[in-house]
Length: 269
Image 1 (cartoon, rainbow, N blue to C red):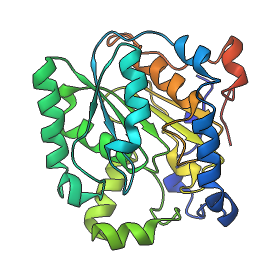
Image 2 (cartoon, rainbow, N blue to C red; image 1 turned 180 degrees about the vertical axis):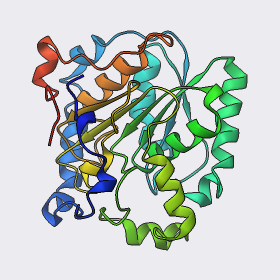
Image 3 (tube, helix red, strand yellow; image 1 turned 30 degrees about the horizontal axis):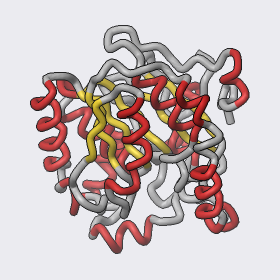
Image 4 (spheres, rainbow, N blue to C red; image 1 turned 45 degrees about the vertical axis):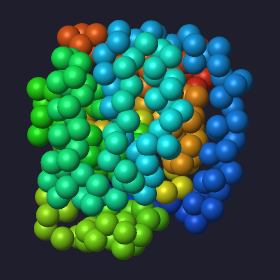
């Protein structure tokens, strides 16, 4: 598998720094460009593999709510999936999901019980870290995990928002409980997992968003901003492609043909 999964885990690279101030300042205009490109990308998005109707729970990023995931949920619904919002308000870390993620596990169980099917988890940024966490707590209810720009390895200070995180969530990024959660998050989940990330991310260090190598993990590098990941056409297509993998026959992302124009062939550093 020729992907960035062959990179060493970011937790072994303590010198990783947050993205540059320039990238951070350009996040909003770049995200707006990505949103504006959706009509032009409609033919590509419609060509993605169709869904099998299984449930997908979409988790928003730090400080955002289900409003931020509207585009991706509507797209997945049109592609044939049963897309669900997380319904836990703004993502303020443990304030939203509970200290051990118990509120999110409860929401996952509710979708699982309602549909009678395993649930795929798509998490944006902090939501991806949470998706990995609950996949360990309820692996019987999870089909696969897809993270979008989620810094699940390395130092939590390698972002431009860690101070805001501490202020708004009341959780210290270096306390023992947080360190233990991050240590667990750095290893691949017990279900198939895919990390989608961008080197142009202006919020989190992309190196900390790379999935360690395993037989059931993959990495997909895209071009774009952090704040635009949920509306980036290349991301939406990749998510639909990953969700279309048969439950018992998961395979890495195929970059052959026209896909090579949008996704780096290897994604190595």
